[in-house]
Amino acid sequence: SNGSHNADPSANGICRYGKTSKDAPLGRYAAVRAASLQLAAPLSAEDQCVQSMPDASPTKWHLGHTTWFFETFFLEAHLPGYKSFSSTFPYLFNSYYETIGPRQPRPRRGLLTRPTLEEVLAYRRHVDSAMTQLLQHPLSSALMDLLDLGLNHEEQHQELILSDILHLFAQSPLHPAYDPRFRRKTTEASPQGLVGTLRTGRPLGHESEWLAFITDGGYKNPLHWLSDGWAVAQQESWTAPIYWVPADDTWMIMDLDGLHPLDPDAPVTHISYFEANAFATWANARLPTEQEWEFAVTTRGEALREVFDVAWQWTASAYSPYPGFRPAAGANSEYNGKFMSGQMVLRGGAATTPRGHTRATYRNFYHPQKQWMLSGLRLARDVD
Ligand code: AVJ
Ligand code: FE
Image 1: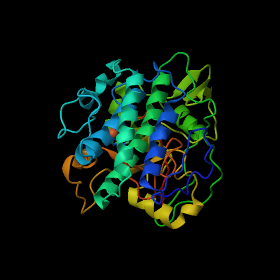
Image 2: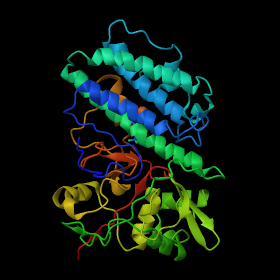
Image 3: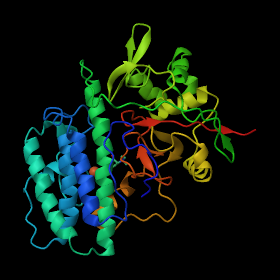
């Protein structure tokens, strides 16, 4: 892991914590597990039970699922004599592992009023105490790798908790703030562009530029759009990014700090690949491939801003296996490999990504029509 990003730990009012692979396993485990609870702390039990759409999960489910992951892959498999917490929780908290067994359908996770939040928290304590036992002994290198996976998995769900709670709160007429101190960063001047065959005017589209795209009829002109994107934009009547709320003759933006006026200097966030691509076409530019993105960041990273700590950046690359990719052995072969169809790669990191989680080679991925995660864009232009 690389903890050099997000230099100001309190920048967003979002909990950041220390975690490097040099730390002892038990310390790393405890820090990551505690961070999930800290993220949930501002939320009521009601907030944590509701599911706003099939892609989003209740916070309570995230807290149970990450616990199930350690119970299933560590404790059941590697702690002799481990007593499972409940015979029904594996059905409730298995996400998508066909090889593990049947599960609650994803769109119905919000119907789980039972177990109560208290019971899920007791599940966490039960698993944490067994994990503490396991981690006190020296770990084989296979178990060390599995611990990396389990901790990175929980960190991915920490970011998902925030994406999902924002989507939930955006449905509320009260527009609640998750954390009134959360502030999106505004883009500093960044004249330098990408190197090699590319350059960028500015790294991320500002809200004022996105506004220009809208007022120029960007959402109404099929010529900017990919056919699949145009179809979903019509189907779902897209006129602006999902968290833009019309107000008189301007826009308000819903974010983790609640509803606030559009900030012309803030980078645009929560956009689908289709919107990013349409904007790039309109702006006479394109999205970089993931190889171009990585080359620029690893060779000229210090000249680029907002690489890891504002919004994940869509690339023009499909989430396909690299040559030589082999899924992990066993049930965890289902972790990533089976999703390598129909999704696009995002690079970088976001304001909601746990500190030290991401790196220049990290491949995030989502379906091209999804908008609720903390996505943004970085433009590329061919040098003529
Ligand atoms: C990498 C964010 C697309 O949400 O499915 C969570 C993360 N993997 N549990 C997802 C993940 C397994 C993954 N994304
Ligand atoms: Fe998961």
